[in-house]
Amino acid sequence: MSQVVVVDKPTNFIRNIIDKDLSQQLHNTIKTRFPPEPNGYLHIGHAKSICLNFGLAEDYDGKCNLRFDDTNPTKEDIEFVGSIKKDISWLGFGWAGESNFSSNYFAKFYAYAIELIEKGLAFVDFSSADEIKQLRGNLTESGKNSPYRDTSVEENLEHFKKMSSGEYKEGQCVLRAKINMSSSFMCMRDPAMYRIKFAHHHQTGDDWCIYPMYDFAHCLSDAIENITHSLCTLEFQDNRRLYDWLLEHIDEFNKPNRPHQYEFSRLNLAYTVMSKRKLQQLVEDDLVSGWDDPRMPTISGMRRRGYTPRSIRNFAERIGISKVDSMTEMSVLEASVRDDLNLIAPRTMAVIEPIKVIIENYMNAGVEKIQAPKHSQDETMGKREIHFSSELYIDKADFIETAPNKKWKRLAIGKEVRLRNSYVIKAERFDIDKNNEITTIYCSYDLATLGKNPSDGRRVNGVIHFVEATTAVNAQFNLYDRLFNIENPIKAENFAEVINPDSLVVKNGFVEPSMQNAVAEQAYQFEREGYFCRDNKSKELVFNKTIALRDTWSK
RNA sequence: AGGGCUAUCGCCAAGCGGUAAGGCAACGGCUUUUGAUGCCGUCAUGCGCAGGUUCAAAUCCUGCUAGCCCUGCCA
Image 1 (cartoon, chains in turn red, blue):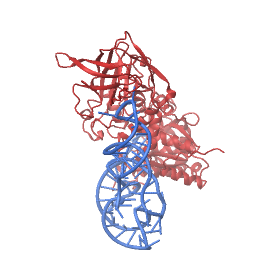
Image 2 (cartoon, chains in turn yellow, green):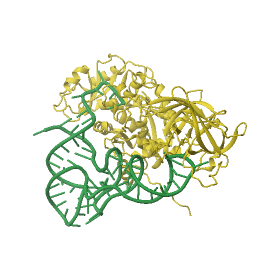
Image 3 (tube, chains in turn cyan, brown):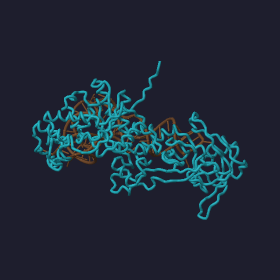
Image 4 (tube, chains in turn orange, yellow):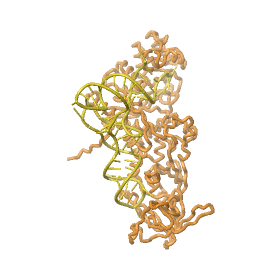
């Protein structure tokens, strides 16, 4: 008899809708889609949407399409198609079949536009953009009909064909849906469906000089792909009326199981920014090193920082889906990252701010080799070799001349401390230079304490990490912290002023020899310091700090 | 009287008329050769406010208040 393991997925309003649709047999299965515009890099906010759309498809045994929403050739670029695919795959999701492009459907869109014109539901407007704006009215006053609104079907057909064959100039006219100029939904006041752009498109080349607007293309693309649940963010709530209107007025799609749009709130993360425009500004103003700067909330930045796909997926699950405007605390993301890394990261030692230690009573010549576990709670990870000798490095922060109180668990003169995976040592004295900086600490060690506590029963209550000096390997450490000093940076007038000046601190120190060939993007824990990964762009040994260990003491 | 949404613990978030899940954070304690991890415990007599319906209301009704979104030939 097999046991069914039920993993509870947190529920949300979209799952409730799907459950209802499925139980009423409106659909046999679900189909979602992730529809990025190829005009920038994906960020953690996109990851939320990706996890939602692909996750739903997985859980309901449905499908999720990847569709590039490429209806504006002047703003989009093929370069982003590759990076977007890479990021989605890296997160661990696969899309149904080949990736799609809205531009695949341009010919169909054209036919649907003709259908609308023939039904008297669309017209070609030769008013200028400014005139259209004037006639649109405003939030409290209804708009006025365009003088071209009553053009005959035949003439509209002719004009639209001329639009598409390049006989009109850019901006000379536009195809508009004929809906209602006094609607309280601004998007229903005869919205533009097609505009003229003599622009080269990365997919369709120079085949078209008219391009559909988002509102026209999106719902139709969904319908063509048999999407059942079209999920987007809150700012499209009004647009839903247009989405529904269009599908209800195209014969082929006016049926109960047509796609329906549902909106959820976008992710806001404290102390960072999420908008493409703002991220771009950070890059362009050289406030960060690029889109994949480990401080960026981009998928590529987080990857370089050492975040794992699973940690991001766990994060997405933890924050849930709702319609509330919210600001999620960084701690939720950080906890998700730590939870995953704690399980998978081999332990190793690095000294980030080295200070020399001499073991004066260590009589062995050369270097002693010790086998240390890669993970004290997971033996299956095996062991690595560490070294010990009369010359070591410990971290500056782990020594103080006199312990400030009884709770001090590090080294101090006359005090004993355990060197991680090694011996117990006691600090005897130290040298300082002319700036009063400690240069060397002289210690004694207890040779009977390797792998065991002192036999006389005395308690050693502190453990610090170290590396053996003669075999230590030089490494650079990039220590990252939050990019901004304020919770919601978009409210700042000047971006540069609210950047955290300590968001990147570079240190040079040592790692144990086993880290010589550390793999890029692979998580390691430098014990007592935090999780790090080798930088994926540097040839030298450079480690990016992913996240510090939880610290309940320094406060 | 423009319209569309939203309001449950510091931050997320379940709940869908039967008497407030969970996570993060915080705070205690135990274990520990990582001040980590793990484990145990504490943390909303109350669900934006005010009324009403009901034996029973976070859930239904009425009226307020606050916040977000909408006037691109952007998405």
